[in-house]
Amino acid sequence: MYMWSTDTYWFDAAVVTAFFAVGSPLFGHFEEHKPKWKRLLKVVAVVSLVVGLSALGARWLAYSIIGLMLFSVAVVHVYWLPKRGVNGWTGEPKER
Image (cartoon, rainbow, N blue to C red; front, top):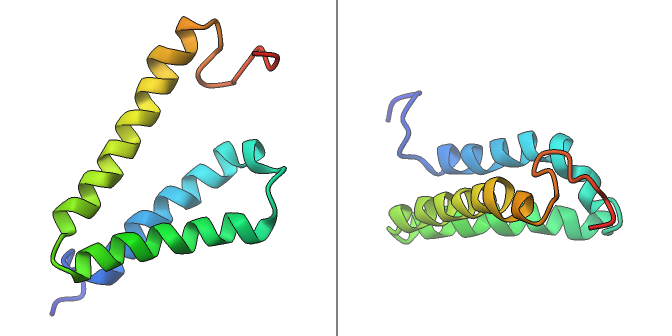
């Protein structure tokens, strides 16, 4: 196995944790009210799901789920929120 191989479980875990590493500083303020153990459990559950699916031979499904989540986020922030008068990037006005 090569050092830079992308068909390993470590790569799958790295992809998922990279999304959390980028998303946490940008969107973590929306989850400040949640207990830390729930936020940690979410990371462990998502990494376990993706690596587990990959281990079962359904890597395509794991990455399809990731793609579907990214698509859903894009639809909400680009279409649904602005349609209701909320800025999809800043979440303002907060009352809505």
